[in-house]
Amino acid sequence: MPRTLAASLVVLALIIAAAPAAGASTVGSQRARAAAVMHRLDQLQTRRDVAAAHEATARAQLASARAAEATTAAELAASRRSLDAAQSMLAEELVATYKNGGGDPVAYVLAAGSFSDLLSRVDVLRRADSAGSDLITQINATQHTIQTQEQAQQAAVRQAATAAQDAATARTQLDTAITRARAVLAHVNANIQTLLAGERKRRAQLADTHGDGSSTSTTGSGGGSGGGSPPPSNVFYGDSTWYGPGFAGHRTADGEIFNPNALTCASPWLPFNTQLRVTNLATGLSVQVRVNDRGPFGRGVLDLSAHAAQIVHLSGWQRVRIQILS
Image (cartoon, rainbow, N blue to C red; front, side, top):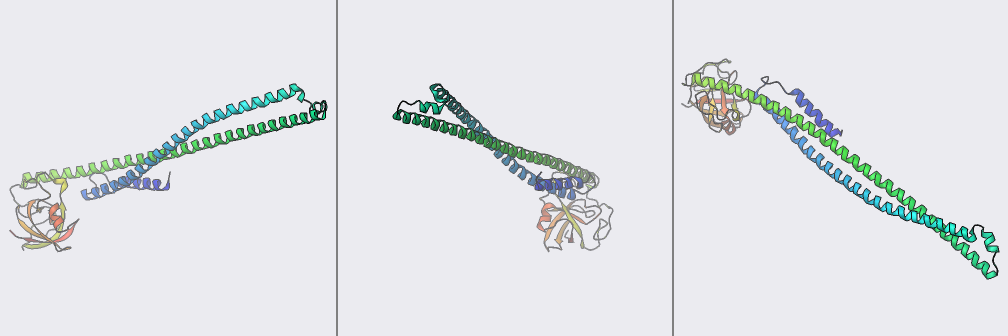
C-alpha cells in the first residue's frame, strides 16, 4: 500500500475511534466531528478519482499490449513459415548436392576431364558452399529475431498487467476507506439529529407550559452570567451563544415558528417579546432582538438566532452587553 494512502487510512481510523456516542457531546462538537469526517471524505474521494483514472490508463495500456502481442504473434507465425521454407530449401540443396556426387568434393574435382572443366567444378562447389552458408546465417538471424520479439512482447504484457492490478488494488482500498468514512458520517449525523430532536422536544414542552409569556426559573449561577432571575438594572452582562438551522420550522417556547433568519433570541427568564440591544464585547457590534424562546440552560444569558449572531460576529460562547429596551 502506498505510504500516502496508508496515512489517510490511519487518520480515518483515528476519526472513527474518536467518534463519541450519541448523547455524550453537544451538537456543536458533533458538527465539528462531521466537518472533519467530510473533509477527510473529500480528500479520499479526490484520491479515489485519481486512482480510478490511473487504473483506466493501466487497463488501456494492458489492452494495447495484448493487441500488440496478438499482432506480433501473427507476424512471428509468418516468420516461422518463412524459416521452415528456408530450412526445407537448405535440406533440398544438400540432398541434391549429395545425389550429384557432391558428397566427395575432392573426387568431384579430380574427375574433371580438362582444366576448364576443373575450374568449372571448383566454381560450382564454391557457389554451393556460399549459398548454404548464407541460408544458414539467415535462418539463425530469423530465429533470434523471433525469440527476442516474443520475450519483449511477453514482458510488456506482464508489466501492463501488474500496473493494472496495482491500480485496481489502490482504488479498492480507497473505496473501502470512503465507505467507512460515509458510515462514520452517517453515525455522526444520526447523533446530531438525536440531540436536536431532544432539544426540539424540550422546547415544545416549554411552549406548552410557558406559552403565556410567564417567566420561568432554571438552574444556573444566577446574576448576569447564569440562568437565574433577571438583574435589577436594565443593562447587564453575560455569556451568549447562538442556535439556528437545526430548529428551523419548529415551535419556540412562546409558540411561534422559529426562523433562524429573524432577529430573535432565547432567554431563561426575560418575558416574551422583550426588546433587547445586544453588543458583542469582542467586536463592539450591536443588534436589536426580541425574546421569543427559552434558553440557554445551565450557562449563559442569551441564545441568539443565527442571523443575529452573524450581525455581531458572534461564534461559540462570547461575552455580551445586554440593554433592555422595552
